Image (cartoon, rainbow, N blue to C red; front, side, top):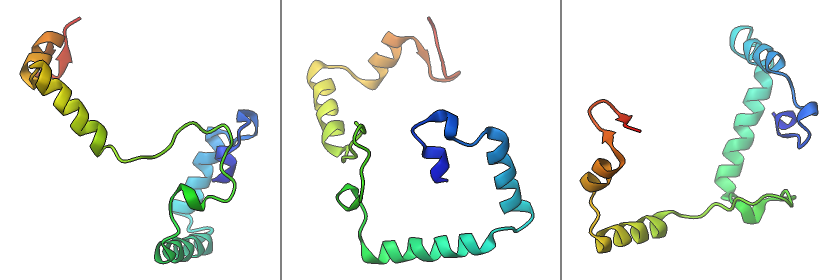
Length: 106
């Protein structure tokens, strides 16, 4: 799996390689011990509660995404929409969305 995250796309596995790997895991029960070890490690990490960005050993220096709760942003957007007088129905009508057909008229 780590090879899929390689910064250089040329060093990542091909779709065929990934497909064959999944096939060997699913259909031939190869590498079953790897899954058992991974599950044990996952449970160990969950028990230690060492999850989150503060526990990352070597964060990728060019990463720009930071996980954060959305509740503040959702409530802020809701209050902005309500203060502007926009409702769900008026936005749907303005955008030309046919809710019944799930299409947008452009």
